[in-house]
Length: 172
Length: 172
DNA sequence: CCAGGACTGGGCAGTCTGTACAGCCGGCAG
DNA sequence: CTGCCGGCTGTACAGACTGCCCAGTCCTGG
Image (cartoon, rainbow over all chains, first blue to last red; front, side, top):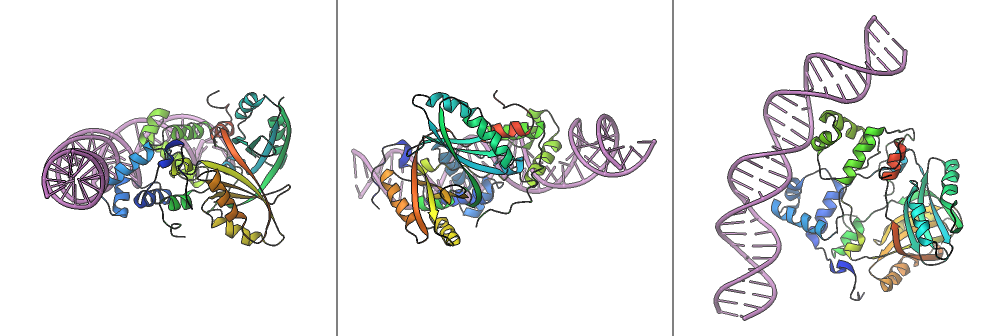
């Protein structure tokens, strides 16, 4: 698996085993502090502190924001909508979608369809309302919606971290 | 496995304005502690502590894990693959996909296609490798992949929090 | 009208954080 | 070979925060 030189952003960012263990530890128990980490990882506190600072500075770790669960907020229905945009309307459509709270994420994509967005709703019935609001905008030619039924693999990054560190998946 | 311990998500969960302000504050500045929150929100420390405990107990806030950026780990390419599964192979396919580090998320969906997964790769060329690995499994009949070009709206939940709290979106 | 729940304001002991410093070690350059 | 440099280790100290407890007040529902 020859990885061609990646010309982009700090793609060079390579994390080592300690970085990976630190990330895994923090992911497993976010509430513990630097001191506790240093004890569990068997390294000096200053080291953990320095590693953490570096990881954040490099952007590997973006932050420690609270993970809010839409379902617990009353939005248990998730759906993915593929949108087709009429030429030149891209900018306006983005702004429109960004203004809809139920649109949690938006990507422009290749393939048939120009954008893919993740939306949530209070119920299947409510989803209709959300979709109407989403597509009720000039510039959106067509929309195909797929409701998410189950989520066998919730968003995760740890396996990737383990791989990036050169090791096998964590304790899996 | 799938879906971590999900407290009985009583969809009834309603959060009030203070909860919303707290979540927004924590999202904006994750590093501050309970005491600092209480100062900024102009309430007693105990109140903030109680609110936080309740939000976490109800599952509204899942945790404060580190937000790892795949791009910074050397995986700048994101793609969405729609998979078609042959009858009765669901379970095996899930297990297979779960074993691929580059598969960050997997949903079963309605519509044409049975599953939708988010995958990342080191480069477009590498994406081919990942896709091969993903679809190289009996039970996957067909796969359609769309590469994510841009991400006009990165995953967000704050607008939803604001709305759930009964207010208008924060910023405006 | 009373009880239960929620918020306030204070206090205490224990622990962690931010920061600094000196010593040690392995790698790189001269 | 030698010197320099970056990274890790221990240790130390002052300041700040957390977890926990309590009494008092206010508001709402039964």
